[in-house]
Length: 483
Image (cartoon, rainbow, N blue to C red; front, side):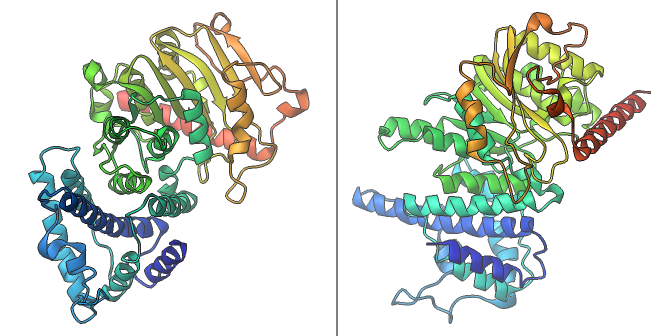
């Protein structure tokens, strides 16, 4: 129903000199979609209040309403081009009046988890990048065709928005930070198996893919009012450092049906993990934290194991954000399993001695588009030491890439075998007693792989060499920083 509208929006954006990449398209579409969503939400709330005979005071009113500045209508309900701003007048209004007004909500809101605060935060972190007020007018009229007043409409819009996020991930550069393959996320969620009433956390939530898929996993048609309220307001929590990712994450959750997403715009690594209280902890962690980064010394002081590797700091954070008995599923570079630097060894030791690392999913190259590193997924339960680690070496039987991405069928056997942790040609178990306590090496070594299957392709060898060169350079950089 709305796919053609999205295509027209993209076509219009290509005519604006201020739009250069898929990231620009996503950002500028997102703030417009958000304001149109607010308009439909406010109309729905006003109608419900009228039916119940109670007053309703809208969040945005007067000249700030979408129907006032973006899509004014005549007496017959048709778009009124005689009243609507366009060209430079429209750009000036958005930049000099609308955005500054919306930014004030960050200070006037009663708390960071309110819709009012989200409005202020979003419009304090992004800019209007349109250079042409005529293109902006065209896009506004297209966005005005979209409707957020039914679950069917939201479902279609969420699918279209996910496609846009996926295109960002495939676009290269830093776009890949925003997209984790949804089949992998769904498999992780199935293994962790969240229950209604448990809290789910992602401290590096990006486009909120983990939280959105967990919402889809938990929602049912027969939920009571209390259960629906729990799912809406007391289940999903996230933090995101980057402004664009924060905006996209909010919009993605809204489109999936979460009215006021509990995502905070904050640098998770600025939190001292030794000061995390029980009230701050969660039942489940699902995450694909960024790697690399070269974190500053003052950030590293927030962690008992110092490292410039961002993912290592996030893993320490996640282990401490879990309640006793809580479950985690975290994506990390596969070099974490075998690196010999002190931080890697100490972190593996802490993970194995304070958590039950029961499953390691070894992902093939090409799982993440635009990322030249291999990854694994660590599945662990907090509060008891590891006894056995079950490995599964994912092999789709084909090379993965942009035109041949990972799908749900590729992960079906892993999901099926994981509860029993059965051996197969691609899975095996290693007892903690067989892991060297001097190095805590967790390398993936499939004992059932035929000898010829262990031969790597030239590209795999090159990728491995580049990854190890980068790791060596990072370690040397840390050493120099200490001298």
